[in-house]
Each structure stands twice: as C-alpha cells, then as structure tokens.
Amino acid sequence: MADAESHHHLALTDWRKGIAPVSKGKRVSQRVLLPPEYPTGEFDDDRTTMGKDMVGFHLSGKCPVCKHDSSAVCATRYLANEQHDDGESRDRYQVTALKCACVEDHTSEEQPAPLTFGCGAEWLLKVSWSHDNADVTVKKESVLDDEAWKAWAAADANGAAIPSTLTTYQGVAGKWQAALTAIVALVSVGTLLTGRSAFQSLATGWQVGLIAALAVAVLGNAAVLWKSDLASFGFPTLKYAVQSVKNLPNADLAPLTLAKKAEDQMWSSFGFAIPTILASMAAIAILLFVGPAPPTASYKVTEKLGTVSTTTPCGHFTNYVPYTSPVPAALQFTPNIAGAETVTLDGTNITTIESC
Figure (cartoon, rainbow, N blue to C red):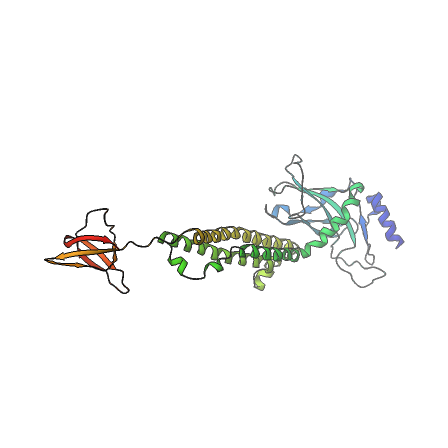
C-alpha cells in the first residue's frame, strides 16, 4: 500500500520518475495527473474514420503507468463543449477521463485472482477537434491541477453514464410519447368519424377536402405512434438490437449510437405530429363552420303534346339552370321521387317551367 501511495505522490510531481511500468503481480489504483511536458501527442485517435454526425471516437496509446496499450472512448455527441476556433478549425473540446484498459494480467497481493482489464490507473486529457471536418488533427493536452480537481469527478461520471445512455434516453422518450399522444388526442380524429349525415350534407368540394384532411390526420397519427414506439422500445427484432455491436472495435460506442437513433426517431415523431394536428383542426373546422350544401332547386315542367298538356312532378335538371339560358332541345330531368329514373324531355314541347 505504501508503494502505491508513493507511486501516486510521485506521479503528481514528476511523471518521468514516478510513472513506471507495473510488473505482474502489482495492481495500482491511482489517478495520474499528467504534467504539461507529457507527450500527449503520442495518443492516437480514430476521428478520421467517423463522420460529421459522430457520437464519439477512440483514444488509444500507452498507459502512463503500466506502459501497455490501452484504449478509451471520447463521447462527443452529448458531452462536447463549444469553443472559439483555435486557428486550426477546432471548435469543440472535452475533458475526458481515461482508464487503463490493457489486457495484461495485473493482480494485487490483496486480491490474487485476475481482475478486470487494466492496471487501475486513470488520467485526464483535454481533447479538441473539429465537429464538421474529420481531417483536422485532434489535439490532446494535459489537464493541470487547478482544473483537474474541478473536472475529474464529472468526467468519471460522464464515462460511467455511457453504457446506460440508450436506456436513459428511452425513458425520456417514453414520457414524451405519452405527452405527445395526449396533445394529439386533443384534436383526435376519432370523434369526427361519428356518422355519415354531417358528411353527406356537405357540398362535393368540402367532402373532398374533409376526406383529405381525415386521411392526413389518420396516417399522421399512425406515424407519430410508430416513430415514438421505435424511440421508446426500438425495432421489435433481435437482429436490429445487435446491429450496432457487431462491429467490435466500435461496440463501446453502441449505446451512444443507438441513443442517437432513438433521438432521431423521436424528432421524426414530433415532425409527424405537426401535420396530424393541423389536419385534425382543418377537419374539425370544416364540420363546425361549413354549412350544409344548399338544396338542389326543384322545378315542375309543363309539356304540350298536340292539344294535351301534362305537368311533371317536382324534380331537378341535369346541367341546366332554368331562366339563365334558352331551353335546349333536350333536357335531362329527374323527378324527386324515390327510385325515379332520369328522363329526357323534348325542349320544343315545353311550355312552362315553374319553381316548386
């Protein structure tokens, strides 16, 4: 234990003397403060393999304590901070806690059984990059003592939260799903589909408009529910669930990748909610404020065949409005009697047309 404490003390003062390889059988648990002269540029990254819309990238290099190869995640999607362009197009930065994750066998005297990955060392790096240009070199800097004590606990918490990112966001999405469903329900189209009488009383143009509004509202509501379900629960197949972890080098980024997909699905749900609500409001407005179509004008027609005059029952013409133009040679007339058929009248025999 004294050896570990001495190691820790020296690590904070002189890394060249204090940070040494850990031999097999020795496992230290220490936070290593890297001084300004530490060659942080020797840490590699895979930023160039990630696109503009990345959720994070990897930092890899030698552990400052055990000198074994190690890798860690720099989560950028939700944790990055904006900064002024440093002259080399780097406009994002983040303080990241890196823990040794080497695969060497580091055990302790108190716990001789093999432990998890790494020697137990942890250190901070300030990482700067360009969010929209993967070709800009990532800058890594030491985090000095006056900043480290403020950032270390938060950086540790951020790193620990990465595996549960998807679960956390799905919980948020589930609550928003309920809220969104309640909002859409305020103008629910279900209450509009209560009968045919109101629809049949509308003029043809308004009937077409109501059908279009209801179609948009119903389909939009289905899309809202589908997208919000995807955000809250994911696609209902195991193949989809494991898709992001098949690529083993990036499997540690899978929770962030899936959380981003869930976030995109939720935003799509919000997007579909807008036309759904507008279409429902349009349908309601048509039913509330558009009156029934005016009744078809009825007329009775008197014909004279020779010396005999006959008068039809009240009915309506097809494609002819009396008194607005001369009587054509032939008229299509339908009596207002259930089951009556349309007949053709000879316009030359018509003597009078009267309103009913």
